[in-house]
Image 1 (cartoon, rainbow, N blue to C red):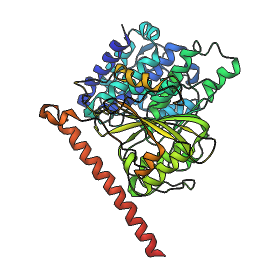
Image 2: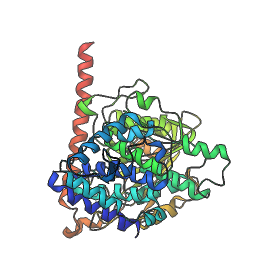
Image 3: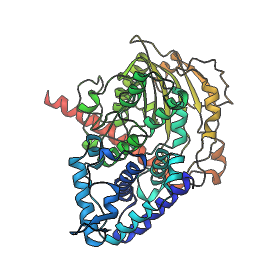
Image 4: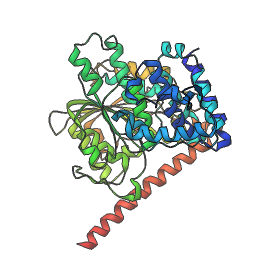
Length: 485
């Protein structure tokens, strides 16, 4: 049985819980609680769990006479609820993070019993051969592609993550950070990339192996449930590094160590309540989340450190503080490459996005002398369930980017008819640092059948409204500040 088959069987179990009113998102949490116990049994790591709180304890119990019998009915549901509470308070510290605040949404004992029995009956030998980490990653991706759940709103597709990691090329001994952690996809992909280059770390000295497992990766996630999934993901992949539950735009982000590599897809929109970041190390205060995250990223890189970050179009053209932040970015970093992404790759969103690749300079001025832009959007299909995105769609860009992770490989400007072009600093400065640069003729406007799907158009309208609201909030705050003076 392949990983795909196992993921499909696990996902189909969600139908068991429909009568309990359990949502897809809640179901993934329920699976996380149960799979952690089962995978600990399968991998021989149950020592991190207190006795009496392990997988077999969900299956069997001893009666007053010491006879082993099947745990069932109301007793099973009561035991499970207490188990979640105890694992969140009495187990090893990393296990506590997985079960912190855990509570079941299941109300019918028969549904819980079936869920446990069906998980226990899976072919776990094949699952171990395929890789338990890949199984869990597949489950998270399955959840994200289920539009009804809303969980995939900002989920970064695996082909895009793999493309970004392969170009940035994280190395053993480097600190890799994701300040918008989500379920940990970027860090897992970076870890996998490094393990593929080092025979699963066995080629490295012992101290460097320990560094990779315990110190190489760091990240922050604001949402508790997403953080829980990230912790589970990291543990299954053998990553023991600290992943923080907190706000990157607050103290948690300010306390993150400087990184050699930053890979991330920050949340879109404005900070809740319209307020700015609650940290004092930003030069340009803004309520726009992605602009604030961009400041965190380029300020959080070590000299020579490199980043690949997914950002919406408005970061490229927004006026006011957006101009100042882009100019600061081009001064402090070498923004060598921008990849304009096609629409529809974020399952419930459809906003227009880009990947910015840059290297932190060793000086504070004039580090960007030219920006190369690859247009993978114009005259491309709108991706989604009908047209799934694959790694093959990025092959042309990867070839044009070259082998150098700092963007210094030999490159060819493909001209007005090509997808890859070079724009020097003087050209960008004349545009008031506006990087929203297009040149290809959009052939789709001539064909009504090629228009984006209605949800994509609606998402673009919403993104423009959000941008306008953010600018209005910033202006209002500034006017109020002048009034106080």
